Length: 95
Image (tube, rainbow, N blue to C red):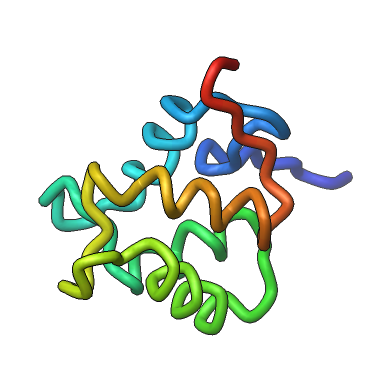
């Protein structure tokens, strides 16, 4: 008998930008309303992505415009664009 556990961290196949923001902020471990590379790595791990350390690094390069090591509310849209293009997530602004 197999036990199936649901993972609340898994995003839907298609989501709106607001749903993406809500999902990614679940990984904000220190509750500072920003996402660090380690928090992003945990998010990527939750969707069973391979090479999470590399994808988190690339996601930070893409989204962390000011280079402070945190993705804040203003930079989430860039992270969503990265997720669409490189992680095959479907995110729409009007969903």
